[in-house]
Amino acid sequence: MIVVFTGGTGGAKLIEGLAAEITPAELTIICNTGDDAVFHGLYVSPDIDTIIYTLAGMIDTDKGWGIKHDTFEALKQLDRFGAESTWFTLGDRDLATHIMRTKFIGQGLKLSEITDRFRRTLGVQPRVLPMTDERVESRLETPEGEISFQEFFVRDHWAPDVTRVRFAGAEQSSPAPGVTEAIRRADAIIIAPSNPITSIGPILAVPGIRAALLARNAPVVGVSPLIAATAISGPAHKLMVSCGLTPSALGVAQYYAGLMDKFFIGREDQGLASDISARNINPLCTDIRMPTAASKRHLAREVLASIGK
Ligand code: GDP
Image (cartoon, rainbow, N blue to C red; front, side):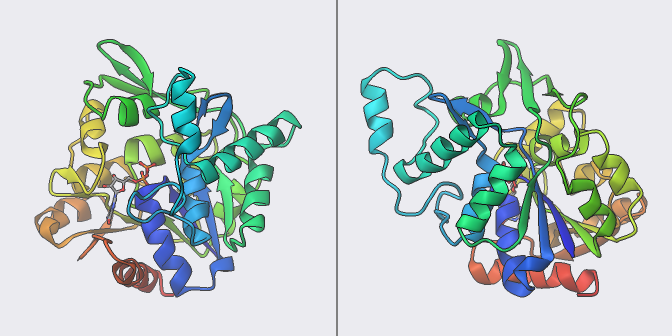
């Protein structure tokens, strides 16, 4: 069994490749929920949805989120009614996911139970586990006050200065059912090329998950989301600076030091290899960009080969 720690868009690319290269049922995915938010009274879990839509073959690959060929009529109508937060784009078919999730939450189901129902309904074979069933929220401190990740990323186009990132609720949370068992029983663990601060950070902040990773019996291999000083997409490099880290694959390696054994970095970052080795992490230089289905499978094959699969 292979366990993958992931956020949404970057992680989904590698997971698509992994699911094509091994028996999908051998995969267990531990997904960030720190970006979850309520819009129009509906509970939205963007990273879980991105992973499930990807594995169901429904994802809008151009955007990296949402359902392909979706329409946005409900959003336009919400706008006419003066609804708040229409900056967060929700497609018409995508809304069905959030309506049903919210209904099931109201009936007392846990996020992990709902996620499992959704992935089975959509024919997704890998297990998809939220990091926790409790509410943990990434909160970003800016000069204008604290905002959520979606407000920072989508509404404000990641322009505000961020002085601190915290994971509200993390200390009181516990891993969702199956998470620590999956880590303990894994043959290998993969840290996807996801935002270290707001995708992997919240997962590691759930008490028990970091400890399970530290006590691992299996190799942990990561893929860098950064090449040179910049994330391949999104604000990972900016948030790393906010958290006092060097914005580079080396900074990511430092952040995961003690938790990771091997680390795929871009060929462009060959010069960082010796500094990464000095942190007891084996650097592996390759092409880590995944713009096409073939490149996703290719990188997945390399990652699997590094763990003897
Ligand atoms: P989010 O929840 O949508 O932010 O999802 P992730 O955290 O999983 O994805 C964002 C991260 O994916 C960013 O830091 C990107 O740099 C990284 N990323 C996006 N595309 C690629 C790619 O093709 N290759 C690699 N290595 N990283 C990528």
